Amino acid sequence: MNLVDLVTSQLTGDVLGKLGGLVGTNESQTRAATSAAVPALLSVFSKLASTNSGANQLASSLGGLDLKMLGNLAGLLGGGQASGLGSLGGSLLSSLLGNNLGGLVGTLASFLGMQPGISKTLLTYLAPIVMGVIANQFKGVKPDASGLQRLFSEQQDNIKAALPRGLSLADFDVSSVARGGETSPARGVHRHEEPAAGGFPAWLPLLLLPLLGLVGWMLWPKPQPKREVVVAESVRREGPVVVDRTAVIEREGKKVEGVVQETIELAPGVAEAVKVGESLTGLFGNLTKVLGGVKDEETAKAAIPQLNDFAPILESLQKSTGALPPDGRSTIAKMVGEKMGGLQKIIDAVMAIPGVKDLLGPVVTPMIETISKLGL
View (cartoon, one colour):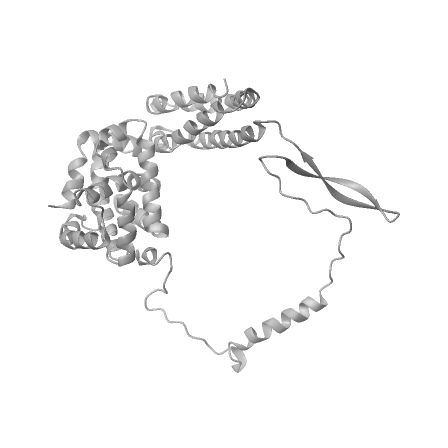
Protein backbone atom coordinates (compact mmCIF):
# COMPACT_ATOMS: atom_id res chain seq x y z
CA MET A 1 0.00 0.00 0.00
CA ASN A 2 1.30 3.42 -1.01
CA LEU A 3 -0.52 6.54 0.22
CA VAL A 4 0.75 8.68 -2.65
CA ASP A 5 -0.53 6.21 -5.24
CA LEU A 6 -3.89 5.95 -3.48
CA VAL A 7 -4.37 9.71 -3.68
CA THR A 8 -3.18 10.11 -7.26
CA SER A 9 -5.38 7.19 -8.39
CA GLN A 10 -8.39 9.33 -7.48
CA LEU A 11 -7.14 12.26 -9.58
CA THR A 12 -8.46 10.95 -12.89
CA GLY A 13 -8.47 12.98 -16.08
CA ASP A 14 -12.04 14.12 -15.40
CA VAL A 15 -11.18 15.17 -11.86
CA LEU A 16 -8.01 16.97 -12.97
CA GLY A 17 -9.93 18.82 -15.68
CA LYS A 18 -12.52 20.09 -13.21
CA LEU A 19 -9.86 20.90 -10.64
CA GLY A 20 -7.91 22.87 -13.25
CA GLY A 21 -11.06 24.83 -14.12
CA LEU A 22 -11.44 25.82 -10.48
CA VAL A 23 -7.77 26.65 -9.99
CA GLY A 24 -7.16 28.31 -13.34
CA THR A 25 -4.74 25.85 -14.98
CA ASN A 26 -4.99 23.46 -17.91
CA GLU A 27 -4.96 19.68 -17.40
CA SER A 28 -1.23 19.20 -17.99
CA GLN A 29 -0.37 22.03 -15.61
CA THR A 30 -2.80 20.65 -13.03
CA ARG A 31 -1.30 17.17 -13.32
CA ALA A 32 2.23 18.51 -12.81
CA ALA A 33 1.11 20.67 -9.90
CA THR A 34 -0.74 17.86 -8.12
CA SER A 35 2.22 15.48 -8.55
CA ALA A 36 4.17 17.90 -6.36
CA ALA A 37 1.38 19.10 -4.07
CA VAL A 38 0.13 15.64 -3.01
CA PRO A 39 3.44 14.32 -1.62
CA ALA A 40 4.13 17.80 -0.18
CA LEU A 41 0.89 17.68 1.82
CA LEU A 42 1.59 14.13 2.95
CA SER A 43 5.10 15.14 4.00
CA VAL A 44 3.76 18.06 6.05
CA PHE A 45 1.06 15.89 7.67
CA SER A 46 3.76 13.31 8.45
CA LYS A 47 5.84 15.95 10.22
CA LEU A 48 2.77 17.11 12.12
CA ALA A 49 2.04 13.55 13.26
CA SER A 50 5.61 13.09 14.50
CA THR A 51 4.66 14.75 17.81
CA ASN A 52 1.92 13.52 20.12
CA SER A 53 0.09 16.86 20.17
CA GLY A 54 0.31 17.21 16.40
CA ALA A 55 -0.88 13.65 15.85
CA ASN A 56 -3.84 14.22 18.16
CA GLN A 57 -4.72 17.41 16.30
CA LEU A 58 -4.54 15.63 12.95
CA ALA A 59 -6.59 12.68 14.27
CA SER A 60 -9.30 15.07 15.45
CA SER A 61 -9.54 16.70 12.01
CA LEU A 62 -9.64 13.33 10.24
CA GLY A 63 -12.40 12.10 12.51
CA GLY A 64 -14.67 14.96 11.44
CA LEU A 65 -14.50 14.26 7.69
CA ASP A 66 -17.52 13.08 5.70
CA LEU A 67 -15.85 10.23 3.81
CA LYS A 68 -19.01 9.38 1.90
CA MET A 69 -19.13 12.88 0.46
CA LEU A 70 -15.43 12.74 -0.49
CA GLY A 71 -16.02 9.51 -2.40
CA ASN A 72 -17.49 11.36 -5.39
CA LEU A 73 -14.76 13.82 -6.35
CA ALA A 74 -15.92 14.43 -9.91
CA GLY A 75 -19.38 15.33 -8.66
CA LEU A 76 -18.01 17.56 -5.92
CA LEU A 77 -15.62 19.48 -8.16
CA GLY A 78 -18.07 19.82 -11.01
CA GLY A 79 -21.13 20.87 -9.04
CA GLY A 80 -22.27 23.54 -6.66
CA GLN A 81 -20.45 21.82 -3.80
CA ALA A 82 -17.01 22.78 -5.14
CA SER A 83 -16.91 25.94 -3.05
CA GLY A 84 -17.83 23.89 0.02
CA LEU A 85 -14.92 21.56 -0.64
CA GLY A 86 -12.56 24.52 -1.00
CA SER A 87 -13.85 26.09 2.21
CA LEU A 88 -13.39 22.78 4.03
CA GLY A 89 -9.82 22.51 2.77
CA GLY A 90 -9.03 26.07 3.77
CA SER A 91 -10.35 25.48 7.29
CA LEU A 92 -8.42 22.23 7.65
CA LEU A 93 -5.13 23.75 6.53
CA SER A 94 -5.55 26.84 8.69
CA SER A 95 -6.33 24.83 11.82
CA LEU A 96 -3.55 22.29 11.24
CA LEU A 97 -0.75 24.53 9.95
CA GLY A 98 -1.63 27.99 11.24
CA ASN A 99 0.89 30.62 10.15
CA ASN A 100 3.07 27.90 8.57
CA LEU A 101 0.55 27.55 5.73
CA GLY A 102 2.09 30.57 4.02
CA GLY A 103 5.49 28.86 3.99
CA LEU A 104 4.07 25.76 2.30
CA VAL A 105 2.17 27.87 -0.25
CA GLY A 106 5.29 29.91 -1.06
CA THR A 107 7.57 26.88 -1.36
CA LEU A 108 5.18 25.10 -3.70
CA ALA A 109 4.50 28.22 -5.78
CA SER A 110 8.21 28.89 -6.21
CA PHE A 111 8.89 25.30 -7.26
CA LEU A 112 5.99 25.18 -9.73
CA GLY A 113 6.53 28.71 -11.05
CA MET A 114 2.95 29.76 -10.34
CA GLN A 115 1.32 32.56 -8.41
CA PRO A 116 0.96 31.93 -4.65
CA GLY A 117 -2.80 32.50 -4.90
CA ILE A 118 -3.16 29.64 -7.40
CA SER A 119 -0.90 27.43 -5.29
CA LYS A 120 -3.01 28.10 -2.19
CA THR A 121 -6.27 27.40 -4.04
CA LEU A 122 -4.87 24.11 -5.31
CA LEU A 123 -3.84 23.06 -1.79
CA THR A 124 -7.25 23.91 -0.35
CA TYR A 125 -8.98 21.62 -2.84
CA LEU A 126 -6.42 18.83 -2.44
CA ALA A 127 -6.24 18.84 1.37
CA PRO A 128 -9.66 17.17 1.99
CA ILE A 129 -8.93 14.63 -0.75
CA VAL A 130 -5.55 13.68 0.77
CA MET A 131 -6.98 13.57 4.30
CA GLY A 132 -9.91 11.46 3.11
CA VAL A 133 -7.48 8.84 1.78
CA ILE A 134 -5.61 8.87 5.10
CA ALA A 135 -8.84 8.46 7.08
CA ASN A 136 -9.91 5.53 4.88
CA GLN A 137 -6.83 3.57 5.96
CA PHE A 138 -8.39 3.07 9.38
CA LYS A 139 -11.24 0.98 7.93
CA GLY A 140 -14.13 2.45 9.87
CA VAL A 141 -12.14 2.88 13.09
CA LYS A 142 -11.73 6.41 14.37
CA PRO A 143 -8.14 7.60 13.65
CA ASP A 144 -5.95 8.07 16.70
CA ALA A 145 -2.49 9.52 17.34
CA SER A 146 -0.64 6.22 17.65
CA GLY A 147 -2.26 4.84 14.50
CA LEU A 148 -1.29 7.93 12.52
CA GLN A 149 2.30 7.81 13.74
CA ARG A 150 2.54 4.16 12.76
CA LEU A 151 0.98 4.82 9.33
CA PHE A 152 3.32 7.70 8.47
CA SER A 153 6.32 5.78 9.74
CA GLU A 154 5.48 3.00 7.27
CA GLN A 155 4.87 5.49 4.44
CA GLN A 156 7.91 7.70 5.01
CA ASP A 157 9.98 6.23 2.18
CA ASN A 158 7.07 6.33 -0.28
CA ILE A 159 6.41 9.99 0.46
CA LYS A 160 10.07 10.95 0.11
CA ALA A 161 10.36 9.07 -3.18
CA ALA A 162 7.29 10.87 -4.59
CA LEU A 163 8.59 14.38 -3.87
CA PRO A 164 9.91 15.83 -7.15
CA ARG A 165 13.63 16.55 -7.30
CA GLY A 166 14.27 20.12 -6.23
CA LEU A 167 11.22 20.36 -3.96
CA SER A 168 12.59 20.34 -0.42
CA LEU A 169 10.51 20.61 2.73
CA ALA A 170 13.38 19.77 5.06
CA ASP A 171 13.25 23.21 6.68
CA PHE A 172 9.46 23.29 6.96
CA ASP A 173 8.65 23.38 10.68
CA VAL A 174 5.20 22.54 12.04
CA SER A 175 6.37 22.08 15.62
CA SER A 176 5.07 25.54 16.59
CA VAL A 177 1.58 24.45 15.52
CA ALA A 178 1.88 21.28 17.56
CA ARG A 179 2.80 23.40 20.59
CA GLY A 180 -0.30 25.53 20.11
CA GLY A 181 1.39 28.37 18.27
CA GLU A 182 4.40 28.83 20.56
CA THR A 183 7.46 29.86 18.64
CA SER A 184 11.10 29.16 19.37
CA PRO A 185 14.22 31.24 18.71
CA ALA A 186 15.97 30.57 15.42
CA ARG A 187 18.66 27.92 15.48
CA GLY A 188 22.15 29.15 16.11
CA VAL A 189 20.99 32.49 17.51
CA HIS A 190 21.94 33.19 21.11
CA ARG A 191 20.89 36.24 23.04
CA HIS A 192 23.30 38.07 25.32
CA GLU A 193 23.48 41.55 26.79
CA GLU A 194 26.16 43.98 25.71
CA PRO A 195 27.39 46.69 28.07
CA ALA A 196 25.91 50.07 27.24
CA ALA A 197 28.10 52.83 25.84
CA GLY A 198 30.32 54.47 28.44
CA GLY A 199 30.57 51.33 30.57
CA PHE A 200 27.04 51.47 32.04
CA PRO A 201 25.31 48.10 32.22
CA ALA A 202 22.50 47.61 29.70
CA TRP A 203 19.92 47.06 32.41
CA LEU A 204 20.43 50.45 34.07
CA PRO A 205 18.11 52.44 31.73
CA LEU A 206 15.42 49.81 32.25
CA LEU A 207 15.66 50.38 36.00
CA LEU A 208 15.26 54.14 35.54
CA LEU A 209 12.28 53.94 33.18
CA PRO A 210 9.59 53.53 35.88
CA LEU A 211 11.02 56.48 37.83
CA LEU A 212 11.11 58.69 34.73
CA GLY A 213 7.57 57.66 33.88
CA LEU A 214 6.32 58.61 37.35
CA VAL A 215 8.00 62.05 37.16
CA GLY A 216 6.54 62.64 33.70
CA TRP A 217 3.05 61.70 34.88
CA MET A 218 3.30 64.14 37.83
CA LEU A 219 4.45 67.03 35.60
CA TRP A 220 2.06 66.39 32.69
CA PRO A 221 -0.94 68.77 32.71
CA LYS A 222 -4.11 66.94 33.74
CA PRO A 223 -7.27 67.43 31.63
CA GLN A 224 -10.14 69.04 33.46
CA PRO A 225 -13.10 66.70 33.95
CA LYS A 226 -16.12 67.40 31.77
CA ARG A 227 -19.31 68.20 33.61
CA GLU A 228 -22.81 67.03 32.79
CA VAL A 229 -21.66 64.58 30.09
CA VAL A 230 -23.61 61.35 29.95
CA VAL A 231 -21.49 58.41 28.79
CA ALA A 232 -23.05 56.85 25.70
CA GLU A 233 -24.01 53.22 25.49
CA SER A 234 -23.01 51.21 22.46
CA VAL A 235 -25.51 51.09 19.62
CA ARG A 236 -27.25 47.73 19.41
CA ARG A 237 -28.76 46.18 16.33
CA GLU A 238 -31.40 44.25 18.22
CA GLY A 239 -34.01 45.67 20.54
CA PRO A 240 -34.06 49.38 21.39
CA VAL A 241 -31.29 51.47 19.87
CA VAL A 242 -29.56 53.96 22.17
CA VAL A 243 -28.26 57.07 20.40
CA ASP A 244 -26.53 60.20 21.64
CA ARG A 245 -27.47 63.80 20.95
CA THR A 246 -25.84 67.01 22.09
CA ALA A 247 -27.97 69.30 24.24
CA VAL A 248 -27.60 72.27 26.55
CA ILE A 249 -28.26 71.27 30.14
CA GLU A 250 -28.96 73.78 32.86
CA ARG A 251 -27.51 72.88 36.24
CA GLU A 252 -27.22 75.13 39.29
CA GLY A 253 -28.06 78.17 37.20
CA LYS A 254 -25.35 77.46 34.64
CA LYS A 255 -25.83 76.20 31.10
CA VAL A 256 -23.48 73.39 30.14
CA GLU A 257 -23.27 71.55 26.83
CA GLY A 258 -23.54 67.84 27.34
CA VAL A 259 -24.60 64.55 25.81
CA VAL A 260 -27.94 62.97 26.55
CA GLN A 261 -29.29 59.64 25.43
CA GLU A 262 -32.36 58.89 23.38
CA THR A 263 -33.86 55.43 23.05
CA ILE A 264 -35.54 54.49 19.77
CA GLU A 265 -37.62 51.35 19.50
CA LEU A 266 -37.08 49.60 16.17
CA ALA A 267 -40.08 48.25 14.30
CA PRO A 268 -40.32 44.43 14.16
CA GLY A 269 -37.98 43.00 11.53
CA VAL A 270 -35.94 46.18 11.04
CA ALA A 271 -32.99 44.91 13.11
CA GLU A 272 -32.92 41.69 11.07
CA ALA A 273 -33.15 43.68 7.84
CA VAL A 274 -30.15 45.76 8.93
CA LYS A 275 -28.08 42.58 9.37
CA VAL A 276 -29.14 41.23 5.98
CA GLY A 277 -28.36 44.61 4.42
CA GLU A 278 -24.85 44.59 5.87
CA SER A 279 -24.20 41.11 4.44
CA LEU A 280 -25.64 42.14 1.07
CA THR A 281 -23.44 45.25 0.96
CA GLY A 282 -20.40 43.09 1.69
CA LEU A 283 -21.33 40.66 -1.09
CA PHE A 284 -21.70 43.49 -3.64
CA GLY A 285 -18.34 44.88 -2.56
CA ASN A 286 -16.59 41.50 -2.90
CA LEU A 287 -18.17 40.79 -6.30
CA THR A 288 -17.12 44.23 -7.54
CA LYS A 289 -13.55 43.64 -6.35
CA VAL A 290 -13.22 40.16 -7.87
CA LEU A 291 -14.85 40.99 -11.21
CA GLY A 292 -13.00 44.29 -11.43
CA GLY A 293 -9.74 42.34 -11.39
CA VAL A 294 -10.64 40.30 -14.48
CA LYS A 295 -8.63 41.54 -17.46
CA ASP A 296 -8.25 38.45 -19.64
CA GLU A 297 -8.89 34.69 -19.75
CA GLU A 298 -6.13 33.92 -17.25
CA THR A 299 -7.45 36.30 -14.60
CA ALA A 300 -10.99 35.07 -15.32
CA LYS A 301 -9.94 31.50 -14.49
CA ALA A 302 -8.29 32.70 -11.30
CA ALA A 303 -11.53 34.48 -10.31
CA ILE A 304 -13.71 31.35 -10.56
CA PRO A 305 -12.76 29.82 -7.16
CA GLN A 306 -13.32 33.19 -5.48
CA LEU A 307 -16.74 33.55 -7.07
CA ASN A 308 -17.67 30.01 -6.04
CA ASP A 309 -16.77 30.90 -2.45
CA PHE A 310 -19.63 33.41 -2.45
CA ALA A 311 -22.24 30.68 -3.02
CA PRO A 312 -22.75 29.86 0.71
CA ILE A 313 -23.06 33.60 1.48
CA LEU A 314 -25.71 34.04 -1.20
CA GLU A 315 -27.59 30.97 0.01
CA SER A 316 -27.59 32.38 3.54
CA LEU A 317 -28.87 35.73 2.22
CA GLN A 318 -31.75 33.98 0.46
CA LYS A 319 -32.83 32.25 3.67
CA SER A 320 -32.43 35.37 5.82
CA THR A 321 -34.32 37.58 3.37
CA GLY A 322 -37.14 35.05 3.04
CA ALA A 323 -37.58 35.07 6.83
CA LEU A 324 -38.05 38.87 6.96
CA PRO A 325 -41.48 40.49 7.28
CA PRO A 326 -42.82 42.29 4.18
CA ASP A 327 -41.33 45.66 5.15
CA GLY A 328 -37.91 44.11 5.63
CA ARG A 329 -38.03 42.26 2.29
CA SER A 330 -39.04 45.43 0.46
CA THR A 331 -36.07 47.24 2.05
CA ILE A 332 -33.70 44.56 0.77
CA ALA A 333 -35.31 44.61 -2.70
CA LYS A 334 -34.82 48.38 -2.84
CA MET A 335 -31.18 48.02 -1.80
CA VAL A 336 -30.59 45.42 -4.53
CA GLY A 337 -32.11 47.76 -7.11
CA GLU A 338 -29.86 50.61 -6.04
CA LYS A 339 -26.65 48.57 -6.10
CA MET A 340 -27.28 46.33 -9.08
CA GLY A 341 -26.77 49.04 -11.69
CA GLY A 342 -23.12 49.66 -10.81
CA LEU A 343 -22.33 45.95 -10.59
CA GLN A 344 -24.05 45.22 -13.90
CA LYS A 345 -21.84 47.77 -15.68
CA ILE A 346 -18.75 45.94 -14.42
CA ILE A 347 -20.21 42.57 -15.46
CA ASP A 348 -21.02 43.84 -18.97
CA ALA A 349 -17.47 45.19 -19.37
CA VAL A 350 -15.91 41.93 -18.16
CA MET A 351 -18.11 39.71 -20.34
CA ALA A 352 -17.08 41.76 -23.39
CA ILE A 353 -13.46 40.62 -22.97
CA PRO A 354 -12.69 37.87 -25.54
CA GLY A 355 -13.05 34.37 -24.07
CA VAL A 356 -14.23 35.54 -20.65
CA LYS A 357 -17.99 35.11 -21.12
CA ASP A 358 -17.66 31.35 -21.71
CA LEU A 359 -15.61 31.03 -18.53
CA LEU A 360 -17.49 33.28 -16.11
CA GLY A 361 -20.99 33.26 -17.61
CA PRO A 362 -22.02 29.89 -16.07
CA VAL A 363 -20.91 31.13 -12.65
CA VAL A 364 -21.91 34.80 -12.67
CA THR A 365 -25.28 34.64 -14.50
CA PRO A 366 -27.16 32.40 -11.99
CA MET A 367 -25.60 34.31 -9.11
CA ILE A 368 -26.87 37.67 -10.44
CA GLU A 369 -30.30 36.19 -11.14
CA THR A 370 -30.52 35.02 -7.54
CA ILE A 371 -29.41 38.39 -6.16
CA SER A 372 -31.96 40.21 -8.35
CA LYS A 373 -34.80 38.19 -6.80
CA LEU A 374 -33.85 38.92 -3.18
CA GLY A 375 -36.76 40.51 -1.36
CA LEU A 376 -39.25 40.02 -4.21
